[in-house]
Amino acid sequence: MTVASVLYPLIARNIFPDEETAVRELALDYMLRQIEETKKSVALFEHKYSMSFTQFEQYLHARARLLESSALAENRRRRLSQTIMLEEDDWIDWKAAHEMLESWLGLQQEVDR
Image (cartoon, rainbow, N blue to C red; front, side, top):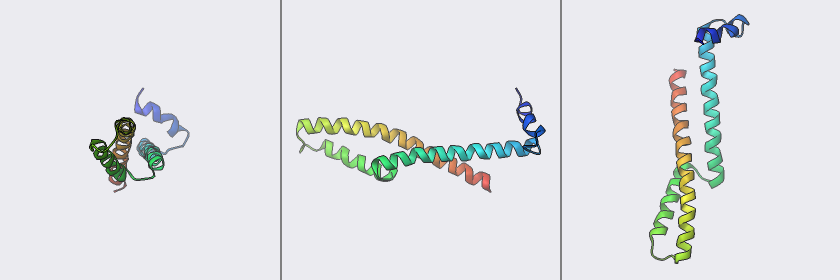
């Protein structure tokens, strides 16, 4: 399957006037859909934790310092450790979504020039 064979039905039905326009419009649409989906992922984490990614990183560092302190009882330390592990899993996913969004937005700026 070639690019031309994929685009031919779209051009034949006058959806796009030519291959260049079709590729440009389809690529832009794909990019915008990726941006919207990634924004949704980021928004879910922001809603879950009621803070931005940067604030969440600061929050995790503070929690890790608390865990390292000797002032906690053993059962509280264990529960906090388990909670932090779950939060760190979210941090990994959130960081990936955050970086992906920055990448897509950067690409959008390049294309819009």
